[in-house]
Image (cartoon, rainbow, N blue to C red):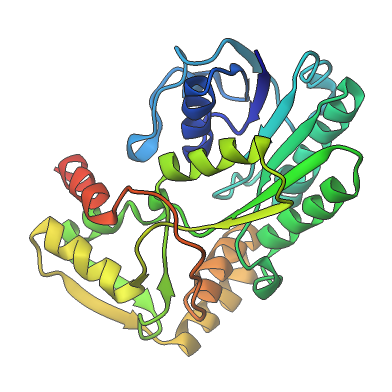
Amino acid sequence: MKRVLVAGATGYLGRYAVQEFKKKGYLVRALVRNPEKFKKPGAFFAPAIEDLVDEVVYADATMPETLSGICDGVDVVFSSLGMIKPDFVHTVFDVDYQGNMNILDQAIKAGVGKFVYVSVFDAHRMMNIPNVQAHEKFVKELQASRIESTIIRPNGYFSEIGQFVARAKRGFMFWIGDGFVRSNPIHGADLAEVCVQAVDGREREVEVGGPEVFTYYEMVDLACEIAGEKPLMLPLPFWLADGLVAAVGLFNKEVHDVALFATTLSKIDVVSPKYGTRRLRDFFTQCRLLAG
């Protein structure tokens, strides 16, 4: 029976990955920094994992002295480790790059057979964003190492638009630009299936998105329909959004980097190969119950 180390196990995708690896018969070792998050269900319906993992290692990927032996006896490392919002202690390079490098070092020492890592779809078009730079810096290191690897390149996650219904119910929705950029975000459970399949696959990189393509405005409109509300709609012009992002950068680099990601994605279509069965309408219907 194969053993997998899941890094980022308490994140949105990480929880579904734990569930999918367990379903496929793996022994699951979870790398966890926050014990409280480990004991609770995840945001936006991501599953609780406390009863799914066979072993839990409490450690901080940014502190290599806590990671000794985490890959011993492991056949596969899966990492969706990365910062999704500022913590005002670490930079994205501390976590997305160096944290994963620390795990890779342990994997090499332990003779792990394969490393599956989650980066970003169409990263080459977004290299102005520090988060993407950090991901891709690690990708280069991983692909240059002697461990067999697969890079998963997903589109956006359902969790990233999970607040749309709640915003509609609060009576105010905004977006950047004309709202006509297209994307096909993917549910965490569908993406986890792709990640686990990659363990036995031969592809060096796998691009993936959800089964439906929407414009940003169509996602907003669907959220309003599900919420049963007609909120105030406010499109934010690019020039104003870019100016606000630049101004924020004068005072807070971490918040600036998150905002830069949003403004960059608002200007480009991000449509990746379709996969999965979970649909956005059903997810927003769940979110309506959550919003009350």
